[in-house]
Image 1 (tube, helix red, strand yellow):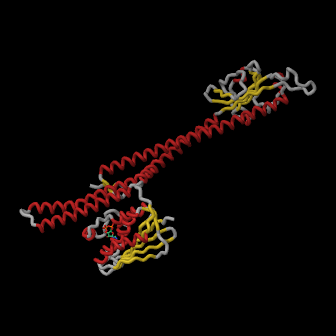
Image 2: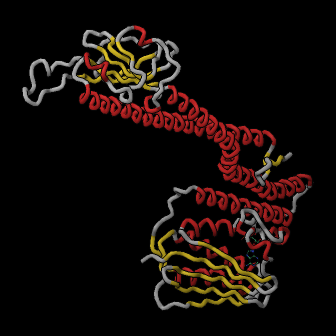
Image 3: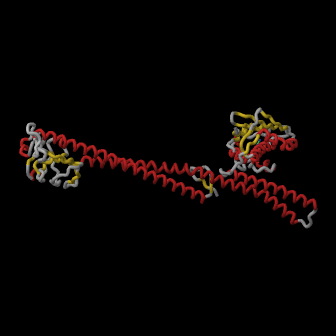
Length: 464
Ligand code: ADP
């Protein structure tokens, strides 16, 4: 019983069908898995890049706010005593001196300090003043100069930087030892709440994008797996078909030999004439079997890509003369005119295996004579076109219907099976010729009109 595998047009047995379906599923799962991993890594990389770029921008912003404030304070603020005289627009919500400055306030009144907290801390770690937001739980301590990450009581994280505040240098007195010692640290911190919210929305978008991509990857993987399996499936079913055809072809002469031998064994006496007949049948069938086996062997050798085709220069003009000579008797017997038309002045030489090239052309001429009725004509033409040698085998025979023209190059394909069998042909001739042409980087094509004749064109690259 044969089963169709859906998208595949060829047919194979049920267990094989299941095996192919399973392989297709596995392949699709692998595709989807690999794509999923790649997309996840890509999404993660993208997320990290976005987060890093934003973090760097915010840190830069904090540093520039700290520097700008330091420069502004430098002009108006020489020491701790002057803190009280600071103009309110410079540091809004300024609170001087004690623990109450850390008590929460609703919101900073200054829009440009949204999310920022500012602390002025003495070198001994004492809080001198605060401004801006008042996050709860961030410790007051002597800050490090590098950028720090700190957390408040709500587990919200902040980045803060500290810059030193120095006493104002008197232009008349010049720098003194006192002036080179900082009197306080200016700590500027910023909440990362908006940044975290933004990153959470980026995470969601990437996750949704990933899910959507995976939803598309799944059918795409299935489709790709189908595409990948199709040639394997096709060649598998071709091998199956080939094995079945070969077995069928081998069975016919074997059955004929067995029937002949069994009928002779049933005879009480075997006359010399009967013996001659029997041996004749066995000999013919044996011949047919030998031809078939050697054809199959040749085909399987040609199928192996690495099969070494001999690379000797072959003169094609000499070759077609030899073939015409060999087929002359057959043409005479069939009352067909067999002639040669050499349409080139130069010697046409190709690199290859002369024995195989001879076989290729012999098959074509043999077919032309076989499928041309009495009184017809078969012409062997050779010409040279650029770097190609063209050999045409033209006959005035029965011709080939257009629907059969592509199929006749298939193994064991015969247009008229009964008639071909009578001639002892197995349907492998053109398949062998095609394989030989391909092994020589050449091609065979056919043009034919039923009832008018056929032209087989062999094109082979010329050796320089
Ligand atoms: P076979 O051994 O049967 O000749 P081939 O592979 O050589 O097998 O040819 C396949 C089929 O192509 C033949 O059975 C025949 O029907 C058809 N064919 C090949 N050559 C010709 C031709 N010159 N004219 C008409 N039919 C041809």
